[in-house]
Image 1 (cartoon, rainbow, N blue to C red):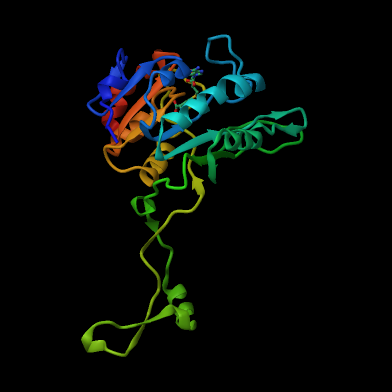
Image 2: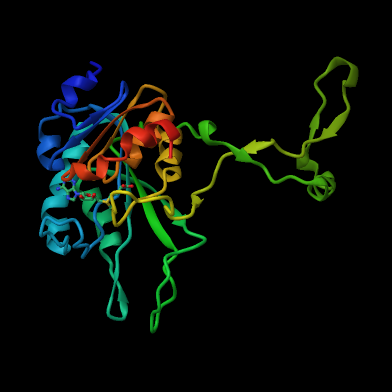
Length: 286
Ligand SMILES: C[S@@+](CC[C@H](N)C(=O)[O-])C[C@H]1O[C@@H](n2cnc3c(N)ncnc32)[C@H](O)[C@@H]1O
């Protein structure tokens, strides 16, 4: 498959590095200019429903998702490579005494567009935003839904292994179970068995325990995610030099994550004032 050059995909960028570019654009208009089967990973956090803080008069109500957002996801499906994935970070608000259901409906809508629904990761925030609610608690979770274009979606969990929690008590307990022994393969220990306590590093789980973004917010963006979040998915879904795209890119956090992991990247946002801090963030990786 032909590899797209970054410059052909990012003309007029407001900020660029050797690996990536921030393009000020309506993401649907941008996507319509992109050739099919271009991206290895699309990862985004669209405006929350009812979010009216982006200064463009749009309040991102249900109709916006049903009409505009589904046209964006249709273009994401077209521009993903057959091995590509789409990670959608989203959480429906509460309204009155109910939790919005758009987060669940989106899954069905995208499936009927042709996406495979592969997984629902839960981003859990140990220190959620404060708030007083009459009949609710502080909201400490968001979803990261994983969709793919075909069953051939690429997956590299070995690039995101986490330390295993084996301690001496674990080892002692495991000695009691036959399945935890294996034959010693070295010639000198031939025929003996030794305890297999488990590997030192294991695959991560679908629970992503990460604080919200508490760092300085010079562009006063109302809804950033922490760089650890896109970094996690870039690690498990792509290889170095592959191409990552974030259509609702905000401050460019997905670009910072991709750059830090040596992937190519493109981010679009309607407003490039949010890109103001990107040059420094590319250096610090935060
Ligand atoms: C939830 S924020 C993304 C924040 C980002 N993940 C970060 O860490 O900075 C959603 C962004 O979508 C942008 N946006 C809204 N409508 C858009 C559109 N039609 N095309 C491109 N960007 C849009 C908003 O300006 C906002 O910055």
